[in-house]
Image (cartoon, rainbow, N blue to C red; front, side, top):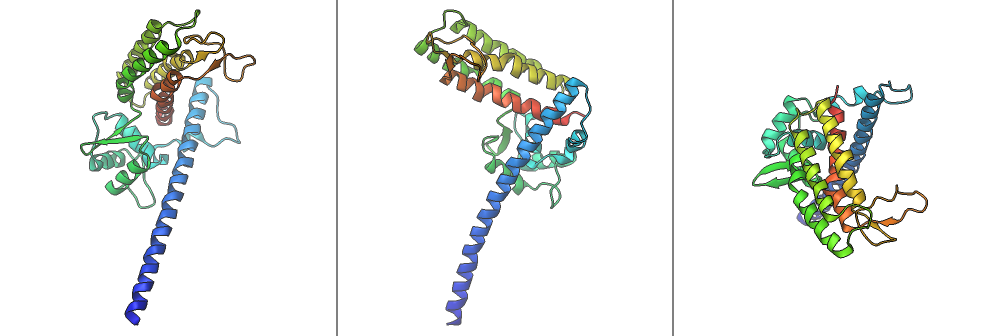
Length: 268
């Protein structure tokens, strides 16, 4: 009887342990997402303040202090290092690089290889793994490598909808993709974590990737692509999203924005 009771209690304890662990994992994921959004906003604030040459108001957080390296979350620290190593790193090497640069220190000290693996699994949209090497999906090199896919989508969508009479033709859109690739290459040539690199990353996104998003939308009055009729929410705007505009945002505009926001957080 005692053995049966012990087995039942052990089974109940293990079941509760699994439930508690699942709840803990969910809470940690939610907290990490909040941290990611918070640091994204702090990066934007720092970039805007730097551009305007103004100081934080009394009601604002101390942005410079908030953005010291030790304030990074683990997945942010992983992205920072992996963007500088597009060839990929193994978990022990990644953990050592993060520790040597003081990018992250949790409650239990430096990040372990197990934490690296767990965070990469939880943030599969940010990290990939090939032959034991981790890489950042949002690195400049990865984005540049995916631009051929954007060109293929452009050919399909222009073939389906045609070009607007006043706007970019397919050839002009593809030239825009080539110019984006050149802007990314120019950014890649600059040292990581510098203001020049941040400016180049921001220029690649705002000057080249964003127009590809806007020009990929379909004008309702003509049914064609390539024309930029106005801003979202503007009265009388005559457009709708397409697979091309979504691809331009997914492949280039959004990841490039995330990259220059992270670089802003490294600027002293």
